[in-house]
Length: 159
Image 1: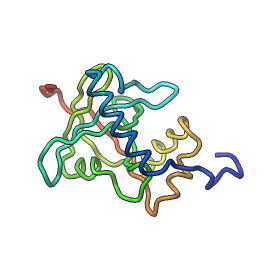
Image 2 (image 1 turned 45 degrees about the vertical axis):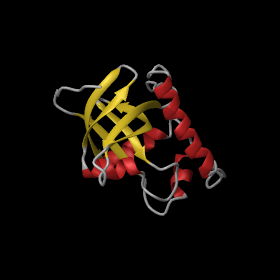
Image 3 (image 1 turned 45 degrees about the horizontal axis):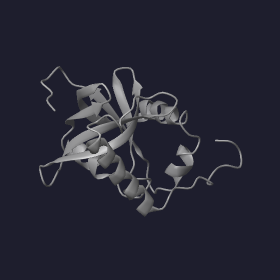
Image 4 (image 1 turned 90 degrees about the horizontal axis):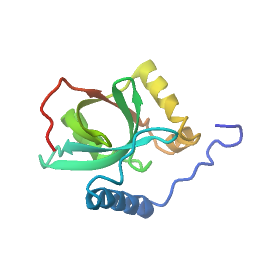
């Protein structure tokens, strides 16, 4: 972030963010997965994360941004930068073994929060995608979890 920019980052209204999430999931579903997922490049990638509801026990789906760090996938536990933790992160903490769908197929993963130097290194990498991450995070009362999705031992992954 350059001098004078701190605190100037703006986030869209909550209604806009929620509508975008609904439309993104619908586009992915309607297109049969052809539109809506992408690998990381100049922009972060988009993946479909399926968690098990910690209260309902039912599958829950979220589309989240990510980048690759070796064999791991890295995302942020943000809720459109709202104060509350996203439900998918609460679900993942209760049941860390899950699957993600990438543009090239399904992958079995185990989620965990990065800590210490690892968290600092992974957080800093988000700055490659936008200089506003620190300002957006400063709008929240606590730190935003950096979530590492590590590959699980080869298990049968079905759609």
